[in-house]
Image 1 (cartoon, rainbow, N blue to C red):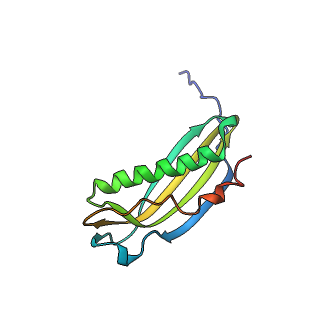
Image 2: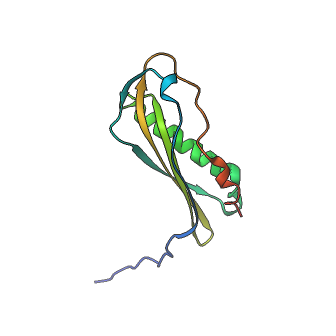
Image 3: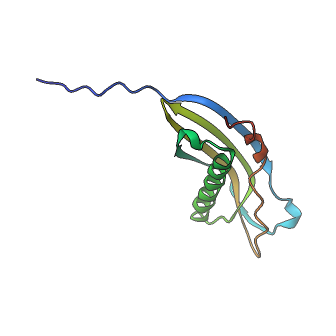
Length: 132
């Protein structure tokens, strides 16, 4: 019997991590709440990036895309807004490869009437010192 072994891969190494605790995005008075979920809903999204493409703009885009994905997921459950939002971003490396993982969470709700303006994800400025 002949066994073919895979070449040994080096593990993914954590390079940097930033996190934002839950932030209330809207005041209750400005919303006509119909339904509020019992707890937060979370999504984890992974983005592969080139080594030389690890910029603040790409980090911001990754957080923004993760938020849009979570909003699409909650829409399938009958919700249309996140009352609170939090996120964490982790940068990994494996040799020359880079990966960004964004974990975006929020408390979904359904409001009736016109949707309020969509504010940017909270505390995006923490990403300024992340890029090297």
